[in-house]
Amino acid sequence: MRSAVIAWDLGGAHLKAARVDASGAVDLVLQLPCPLWQGMGQLEAALDQALRALGSAPVHAVTMTGEMVDLFADRPEGVARLLGALQERLPDATLRIYAGADGFLDLERAPAAAARIASANWLATATLIAARMPAALLADIGSTTTDLVPVLAGRVCARGWDDPGRLVAGELVYTGVVRTPVMAIAERVPFAGEWVPVMAEHFATAADVHRLTGRLPAEADQHPAADGGAKTESGSARRLARMIGRDSGSAPLAAWRGLAAWLAEVQLRRIEDACRRVLSRAGLPEDAPLVAAGVGRFVAPELARRLGRPALEFARLLPDGKAGAARVSDCAPAVAVAWLAQRD
Image 1: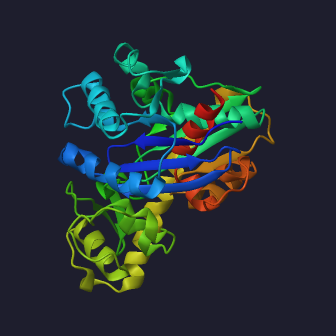
Image 2: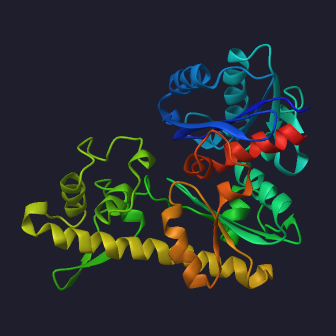
């Protein structure tokens, strides 16, 4: 009989955690805002809150991306400090650290494997998919980034295995549906019959874009807006207008919705282009599905349609549990690490 496992995905902007019961069903999944760049106190507070909700388990597994925030001098320091914070709160638990292709390591072996521990959460998700189906393209569209990972013949067939390699391979696309600044989506936009340059200012984010299109789930946006203002249509219109040097009152709300729809399309085309690049070398069967994960997976059905592939929610690969399917798909790497650790 397997034991329950709690898994942690220690991100730079969010803390995600999942609890898998002894049968392999997902009991609970949570995501908490954690602006780690503001200091370790952010992580410590989020860990304490999460532990109160998750309860205890004999085994805790961990993956991370937060080691790269500018709080740390380099990734090895980040890995060490993140693991230290978790160890301090779980002195009696068995900690298993996910090191990608090296599998799970104990704390003693972790320092020497910092390069493989760093930002390996995408591989956990893809490895679970490879264990459940022969071929697929993982599209984990999150708040900040998009991971595109092919699976073929029950194996992960990524070209890149670390952040630099994945960026070059097009398998790590630095665009997401919440935190991406609008200035990183487009350099100019069509408005009032003109091509208008976008200001290089952090006035608005992708959350404003997708809020104005009516597609952003409220629970996906856990950080303050760029101006600290209201997360409403009018608030998003005000922020978006500033990107082109205007006040929102200079045009009707329909105009700002139209601008948001254009920006959403630009972002989707960027993800589509990256998918086509990955697919052009992966050799996947035509019927291999797009497995959708992340808080931005609401774009996956249209993405799959353009690619001529079926779409499949990540949560459907796992047995039903007490945790809702939406949250399982939102926090796929945490769930995947729990699932893999339980079978390790």
